[in-house]
Image (cartoon, rainbow, N blue to C red; front, side, top):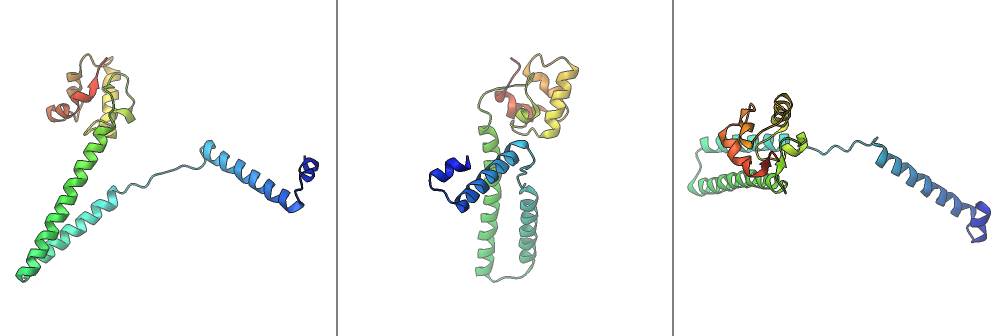
Length: 166
């Protein structure tokens, strides 16, 4: 093989570089597909909630201080802007979760990850749904999901258009 590459005009250094690149490619493919490189996505929820707590405590401190009218107006506008950002974040979170549900989820067959796409259903509730399903030989109709601890009438109203038993 080396003789063949030398016929094409490659030098010893060229061959070393090519070998290095091939070994690097193979190693990268092994890491990618062997599962050794566990890709964990950073969860920003905790840091976001700490930031929101700090902002709210700062607003509380500033409200206790006597401010002139211009400062008070600026504080009020910043507070309303902050509140609108928090509301928008909650709306976006709900919309992104709802948009992930492309078709109705069969609660008799769904995995925990599929159930977690439903609005208001987290990991614990999804596991409870699966546990109930296994203990009762599946759901006969979608209203039976309200027998699962953590799912009441309000939550059922949010998810009923996204679930089926068929």
